[in-house]
Image (cartoon, rainbow, N blue to C red; front, side, top):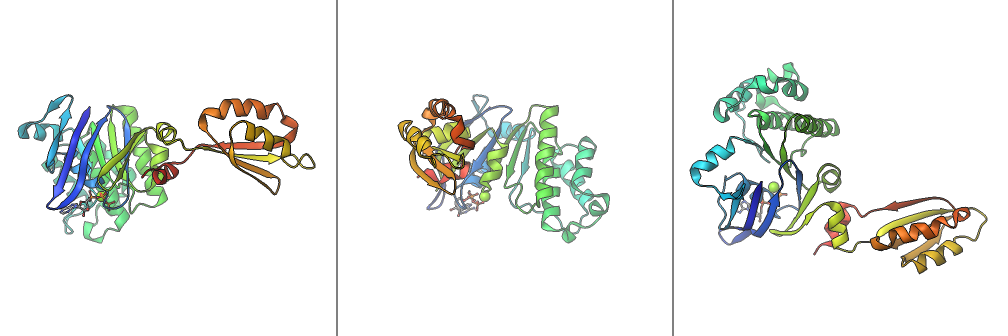
Length: 301
Ligand SMILES: Nc1ncnc2c1ncn2[C@@H]1O[C@H](COP(=O)(O)OP(=O)(O)OP(=O)(O)O)[C@@H](O)[C@H]1O
Ligand SMILES: [Mg+2]
């Protein structure tokens, strides 16, 4: 849908984004993860045509957009910026009406969503009195006003409590069930990103270090699976299983308090499972855990 080709952005001397190339697929939920200052917001703004890349280009459905086309393209985009400016003296409803008149769209389109995000009492209040989370909820509502096909969310859950966070993802799910919606969101909440998105891009110091599904990323880094086996009491104290694990290529094997832990190359998984299952009387339970996005993140240099 959107293709970044060697996109680079300098702010004076500061290189905010360097030679980023990747493709956003239609209908996917894509997460951009990375630490503060790694270039996530810059990349999103370039995607929206709000800032121009110093070098490189963006292709929309294979075509490089001219200025006039950007305006049209923006009509199908919803954008929830990191820091939104509202007029403090307008009420929530007046704010949404103002946004609808500027960007196109109507409050009627998303009446249900607005009601889920903010109570009518809060909507009638001046935005200057809003809490951080209320502002963020209003920010989401304004991004959905034009019934977008591409939704760009910059740190959408920052400032939201767990209820607000869940509501945001519920709303995204509901919209995505109704229509084909592509979502790009940035976040440093790695656990949250991991759970919600189809693919992730990892930014570090302006460079897109890796792109893919979590599975592709940890396999690409050769990160091991973690294995925990609860050993049967009064048996061989894990010795039988220890030998099997060693033969199956497991490393960092430890035993303590009736528990055997080890790390295992992902390609040995099925063979190891088959061998372990031949010794069913040696254990009462086991867990095999794939690396988290956080482990992937810290595994990338
Ligand atoms: N308008 C600007 N003028 C100068 N430098 C900028 C500007 N905007 C961003 N930068 C710099 O570009 C780099 C990338 O910033 P960016 O805001 O894209 O990071 P980010 O990943 O979104 O960070 P955060 O997680 O803190 O939101 C940083 O070094 C930042 O200081
Ligand atoms: Mg940012």
